[in-house]
Image (tube, rainbow, N blue to C red; front, top):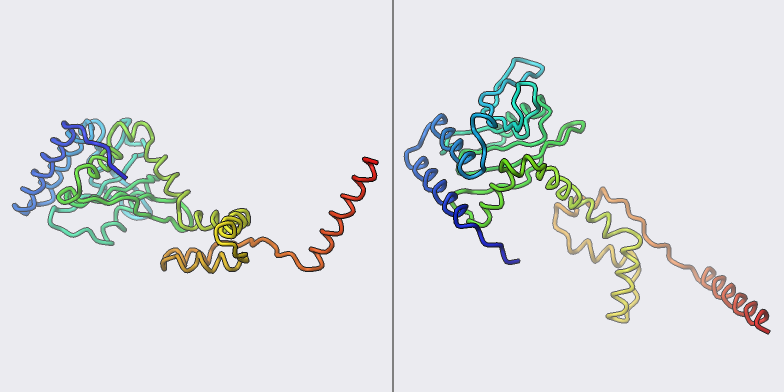
Length: 266
């Protein structure tokens, strides 16, 4: 699928940001300097007023001691306003690890925030938090400002830009992601109506009559390990197969209906 062209001003801003982070990588900047450069990306590329919309070292109160998240994106001001995104920042040359995600996830859960951004300024990872029992954190997108294509970077940074957050675009993204979860797709593909349609279309093309079990077996062979594991959670409602006695009964009923109609016409 061809990608849309990127506005020249956006392209230039992304290239400037890339150059700035390349310099930080070479200089092995500390966390404070990495944070300053990330602030500039939020301001220049994503349209935030860093003094109004980025809450620095926001207090997060959980079951234990009060902790502080590096940044919290807030559209409205105030300490009691629920943040839109919790952001955890690591030094530019520190590899993002599971422990970092666990750390910022706990902040988000305690603050009731559904979105997490974990970054070292080079790698950016956007997560969604679902507040179930237990809460679940799911990676939605990740991107590399140094190596990814400009069109991809433009799309990803636009997604978390001030305008997008204000319009609630992330909620739309989550709804689509949730709908397109492998389990939901499999449930739809393997529904009774879908299997009937597949049987009919395959028979029309090949002339071979397949059973519902044949269709399920064929789909199973197409799936990777992740999808196969999801298949175990899918409830299958296969179309009932007609027995010979049932077919004879239906044929008899059809014949009787035809006879009755003829009598009425006479």
